[in-house]
Every structure is written in structure tokens, then in C-alpha cells.
Image (tube, rainbow, N blue to C red; front, side, top):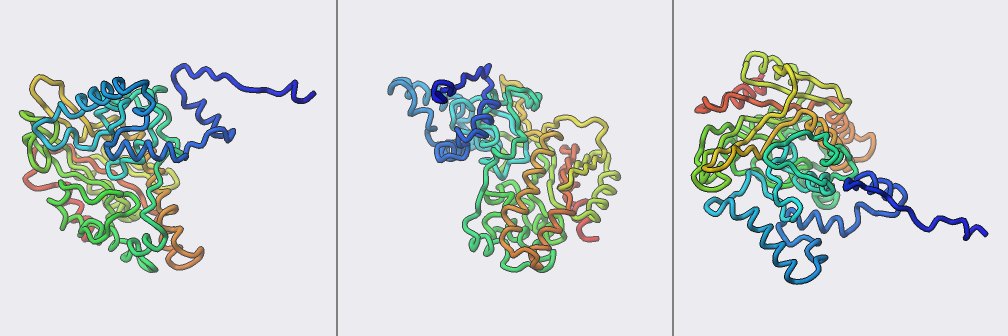
Length: 375
């Protein structure tokens, strides 16, 4: 009979790399990667609560040991400072040694955690090769976190009921910087404290059409217990390169290209929604440390990096958010719909790094950007 010939199961050899098996099972409908269990795990990672895996340990003693090891690996490094790293570490045991992340998801950390939740290894000490099989496929868009910003009505209050001009969109970004709009699709958290130092200039940039989604000022050897820039524990010095990431029109992209060309310390990466890339001041693309620290009896730490390949992965997500979280609020063919669609289809996502972090009495990159915006 047919029952006698049926297949009752499959055995997968994962070789400790379960990514392919997970995708096969998801395609067959045997595994729901968006299940409540997965969502709860991602939530616990970012809220520093005990992860679901702890409940699966054999007994109370195992749970206590695991919790103690996790807490020691994260907290003991920073007894005298408020921050262990420039970004909030995950509470998950398997990520306890993770200490390097790309800057692009700084304002969407849950998306990064969800994209990487099935990695077998996490960068420790150095970013390394992001194409390593152990790291998994960062580019799998099905894994990125969808931050809803509430219901459609809530999003319309924040993003605009009926934007008709580009300046209406610019104003939303500026008001986010000023704190009157709590979130935008690319920033699920409020403005970072270090950006408060340049808040008026950031708001001005956005009203000029440089729609910032990420930025950091240069820092040259600030004490590791500095109230704004400090991290990592006592007795160290922290550094960071100036960085800006923004959506801009093709015309302003050309102006930024000219600006970077005039400043040898700057490099620029840009890409649009069609995948057309532009690089300025870059001979060979490589990983750049954007934040690093020097501490007694420890190797130099570099917890925040820029990776050109990873930037392209982030850009795909960043452009998709125009559609899924803003364009979808308006009727197809309406003026507001066409406005947002035009921005998504024509603007570039631009990342600029200023390697001159040690002459930062005046923020050269910020001044140059303001000059471009005002033209």
C-alpha cells in the first residue's frame, strides 16, 4: 500500500552548521522561524533577561553555574564604568564572548541579533572574515527584525499623515534628532548620548536633506570612565573615528563626492536601492575599526567596525524599510506614496569615515557636511 512506501523521517547531518537545515525545514513548513519562541528569545537578548535556553538546563545547579559564568564574562570587565562596550551586549550565554559588531545596526540592535542568532561563532577580538561558514549568512533578509513603530495610525503620527514635499520628510528626521519624534524606521532607540553634543548641527543637516541614520564624533584618547564616551573599565583610553551615515539625493551625493575628494583623511561608500555602488578615497576595501580602546594588561579592543561588504547587507535592509514601514502607510498612487517611493528609488545611502580623529578640536567632517547641506 501507499502507507508502506511512505517516508517517516529524514536525518540531516549538520556538521555543527545548522543554517542550511533550518532553511530547508522552514521551506517545507516544518519550522516557523518567526514563531513566538524565536521572538521571545530575541527580546530576552536585548533586554538582558535570562534567555529561554536557561530553562532547558538539567537542574537548578546548572542554571546557577551558567548564569554566574555569563555575568562574569560581561560584567566583571567593567566594574568601574557604566558601559562594558559602546553597544549593549546580549545576555545570551552563547554570545557572552562577543565583543565586535559592525556599526550599521547600532540603532537597530534587535535586527542584528535576529540576523545572527543561529551563528555558531561570534566575533571576538577582531571582526574577521564575515563570509566564514561559522558566521552564517548575514545577508538572509528573512532573519532581520521587523520593528513596527506601533500600528499604522501611530506611524502616521510620527512619520506624517500626508507628506507632499521632500522637506516634509526632512522635518521628520530632524524632529527625531531633536527628540520630538521618538522613533524612525532606522532608529528604534532614542538619539545616543554622544550625539547630544552635536544635536543642533545634526538637526540642521537633516533639514538640509542629509537624512542621518547613524553618526559618531571623533574621540582622541578620552578616559575610559568618561561620562559620555567611556566604556570598558577603569584605567583605559578610548578612541573613535568620525562617522556619518545618511540618505541623500543623487545631487548631494555628487557634492559629497567632491567634498571627500578635497579631504585626504576621508573615505566614502555609497549605494542606491538598485545596487549601484560608489567609493571615493578607497583603494582596497577593508574592515576599519571605528571605535577602539587601550587598557592595562589587555590587548587593544575594537568593538565597533565598518565592513564594506556588511554595509551592502545593511543597505538592503535600510532601503527595504522605506517600503515596509513608511510607503505602506499611504494609498497606492497618492502624492505621499509617490514621494516616498521616489526617495527610496533615487536616494543613496552614504557612509563617510574621517580617519583624522586626533585633530578634533573642530569636527572637520561635520563642518564639511554642513557646508554641503547649505549649498
